Image 1: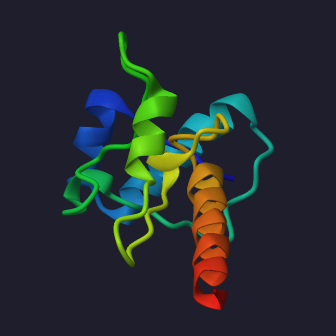
Image 2: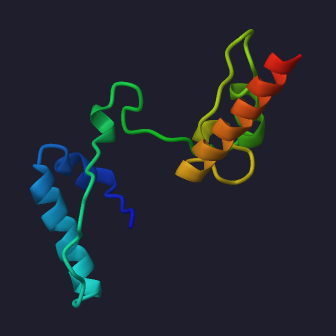
Length: 116
């Protein structure tokens, strides 16, 4: 299961321990699923503290073509290929699926390039 805490609440969670975040999420889930068991494992991330992400992911902006922006972002520059959710033009931007798919696509392009 994957879950997100967003907005002001996400910022408030930044300073809580992993145990506190897990307890908060579990309490909310139990309000909907009272018979839920304790999770076997939990991975807590803190994107706002990540120096590269700063809490962000791609999104469509009014008056811009996301497909054009994504296509421009994934254009190869010399021997450097780009991939990631922000470069996905198949409707999976802002998702792990989008990042995975574009990573595989970039890998195929690299292999093809190296076989020439």
